[in-house]
Image 1 (cartoon, rainbow, N blue to C red):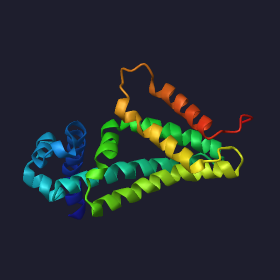
Image 2: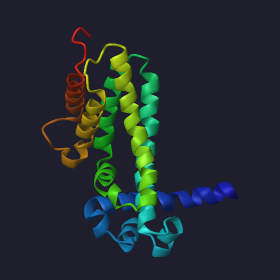
Image 3: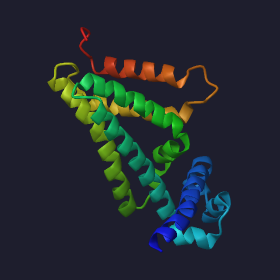
Image 4: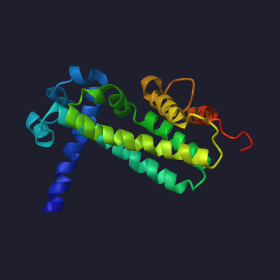
Length: 201
């Protein structure tokens, strides 16, 4: 019975998360209502309240699920990239570009609406944000130790890489002049230049 119940409830939760992502992305947290999310999902208000007792809970769940998807994939990519920090950075920046392009709505919500969370929920979201930034920071610091990255300001460089990668969903359009593959190439180029990568490699 437990398995049957789980299977039955998953589609409703997934539909509500998709609806929350679309609604918060298009209307903003302040402009969106619980009723808007329920209508977007094609579900009743009672169904929404069953999963998310408040709009704050819906926003937190959306933010955490986006971070969790990112972290799971990023960790797998780093695991498969070997121990060389250059290879890791290349793979990670390319992944971030792809992830931000493929998850534009969710990424916009992360960038614009996270601060709308109350202090308790914000702390939960911040823990995931810190974990994602630490992945990049770890790669950069290993690159400095290995002698591949010569920047004297690694922590500031990490913030810059995170910043320009995170800006993608704010302006990227599918009909734009640059393809995702071209953006991957350019953003990895920017990252390596910013970190003053050893030109011999």
